[in-house]
Amino acid sequence: MTTGLRIDNGVVAAALQRVLQSRTFARSERLRCFLKFVVEMEQLGLAHQLKGYTIGIDVFSRDEGFDPGTDPLVRVQAGKLRKLLNLFYAEEGRSEPLRIRIPLGAYVPIYELAGAQRTLKSDFATEGGLHDMSTLVHKAKGGTDGPVRGLPQLFIIPAARTEDRSAIFLNAIRLWEHRLWAVGFAALSERPPGIAEKADPLHFELEVAQQDQSALRISLRHLRSGTELLDENRTIAAPDDVLKLGASANEFAGANLTIPGRIYQFCHASGLSTSAMLCLDATYRYSLDRSDAAYARARQHQKEWPGLERGGDVIADIPHLLAMTGTHG
Image (tube, rainbow, N blue to C red; front, side, top):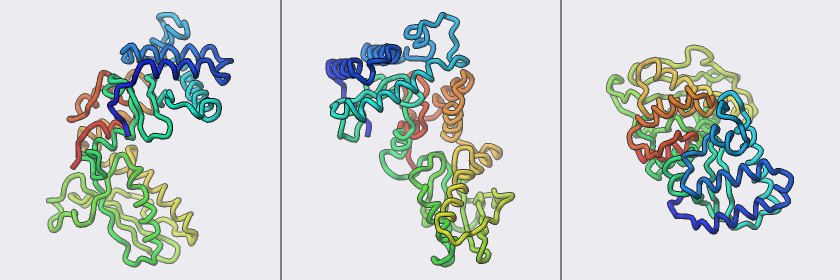
């Protein structure tokens, strides 16, 4: 859980010195300089300057022509720094009361209290900087487990018989409920009755039936139009092995219920994508492709997502992005 508590600078400075003077970091002058620079900049209120370009010049002595988009130096060294910090806190620093972390996709440090499920950040890092996606999901749901407004909702039709392999497949799909960023699971009681044209444009329906002893028949439909999204591969093998059937369900969820999946592809092609969906899509693309163009696109969409609490930088982690919106349906 994130918290808005202000961190005492002296506590952070002492924690930093213990890391820098440790045996774990003794042989890595370059990573010591990297860590010292980002922590001290954040403590001075200059976290917004912690970019690949700045770090490349100020820490690694690159010239002004340095391009972090083509030269991976800073990203590579940040990965090494994360690993060395993890090693320090797993061994030599396992009793440290305050831990310094460099989150993936970011250079702004965060601070964790050992033994507590919370992360401490400076005011800027909480409101701006590069954040992680898990906080986003939570806040978009208003701190609850409810659906995120503006994202597709999926109704799962129960299997005809609980002993069918279709029931096992659907149970495996339901296990994805708290792992999905892009699509929410809606209760059947909320499914609109009657005329399909009156259904919400972001409502979808999943139905799985056991075709025979060795196969399942799957339907993934857009409720309002009745469009079947699975134009092929609607029949899959139904092995006796429960784990293999679960693996098939995982593959289905990845191909259909995620940001690159068929539901989003359908919405984009049909003009149904909301600002939330476009923002998640752009942020996901930036998480994969750290180019300037991907950054600009993600930044623009994050500006256009109503209710998103943000500072001056792109939020690179999707769950954190969702958690920061504070919107829930």
